[in-house]
Amino acid sequence: MRTHHIGMIVPSSNLTMETELPRMLREREAVEPDDRFVFHSSRMRMRHVTPEELRAMNAQTERAALELGDARPDVVATACLVAIMAQGPGYHCTAEDQITTVLAGQGVSVPVVSSAGALLDGLAALRARRIAIVTPYMKELTKLVAAYIEDSGVEVVDALSLEVPDNLAVARLDPEDLRRHWRRLNLTGVDALVLSACVQMPSLSAIQPVEDEAGLPVLSAATATTFKILTELGLPPIVPGMGSLLSGRVSPAPLTA
Image (tube, rainbow, N blue to C red; front, side, top):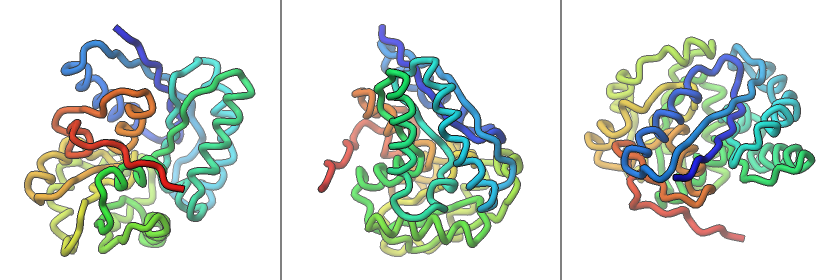
């Protein structure tokens, strides 16, 4: 049996990353019993999803990475998708490199995953070129997220903003409501649906039902982050009942120059 230590950098008000990722990896243990996962977190202060608080939170990255490095994780995932995407296209590479450098200074050389980069990688693995998204953000932040995704070559055909600025309130949204929300989107010619473009907005109970109803791949920032964590660890990305991306039938897209 192999034990994998998962490091997580999360906003201080995030209540979901530390429940959804462990839930998915626990469910994976039921079908892949040779792998076990343990979790270690470091937090960065943020209560409201505003540009000012997101920038202030990003300034805490080095301190959070230093603390997490002491646990000697096998992979590190940083999770606040909008905090990265609001900084402009490609910023996930900057954030991942910053954490990698801090960890390397402690003698820790491990893969670093961001939820922002993982979502792009998940869409690439699904070969999705046209998508629709649901976010909990205010409309202006959703526009930044859509622009970030489109810079990667994926068209955002439609986006639904639930406009919940308080991060704790986002965590309390009922994922079952997503089974109604997605029907408000224009899915004409869409290749995939991002049911939650935010690791704080719960979505797991709706992923497979909406995929079955919509008839197209459904993913979230959380399922994409799990896909990326597993592939970086060299493990098959399989979690039962979590949509096509984690079905075991999807492989990471090859890197392009």
